[in-house]
Length: 303
Image (cartoon, rainbow, N blue to C red):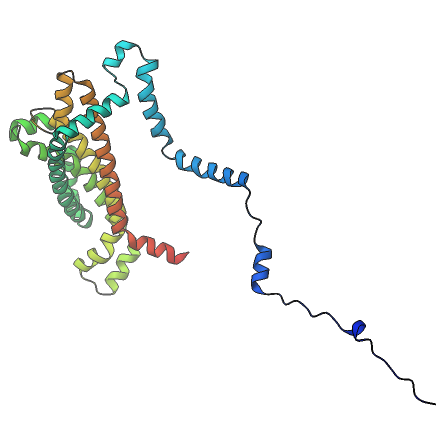
């Protein structure tokens, strides 16, 4: 009797090979479904709304300036408040004739000269006053008297003593820009962490090195706050000074246009002053960021 023969069904016992799972397949399974046209439209609307929200107030003001004199104000008011397109047309005419460039250069030269003198002298004096208590006690009463005297109140004095030329205008700008920088320099030095000063002295640093490596870097943000305030003050005071006894400058352009009843040109000069102040502010902010890069580096390292 022969032994039974065992037969193996290869089709039943064979197993299907497993499909390998790759990193690409897993990433594709985790990838979100493609965005539909409606979702893309919503996302684009949200991005556009965020982009328009920041300058929204300015755009609304310009729109009101354009439409208000035409549709909201009586016709008699349009003579004294022309719509925006008339002002822009006058501005373009002044640029085409080269008049605006000449007035702008004259104002910038005076403002930059007075502003530079004020910044250098105020920073140096502020460092000395903040560092030496005896000098602070000696000069503080006099500085408080002049600090509380408005620059425009002294404009007739500067004009009488220095004449109606460039010297009086540069001097009044320097006077107006001096005190914001001085006060913020003193405050910036006095708010330096005393532990930093003690650590620097324990390392044997000289006074000059201490000022260069510790005092000035720590006081830079506060000093630049005063410099930005001084930049605004220098432009405003200069415009007022140019309205008295000047033959060029944005202030002269404004008052001369008003006296000649060239109202669109007057508003064009005012608009130029506003844009100039905005540009100066952004420029000073950029300079401040350049000199305060070490603060950004320290802050990013802690994150």
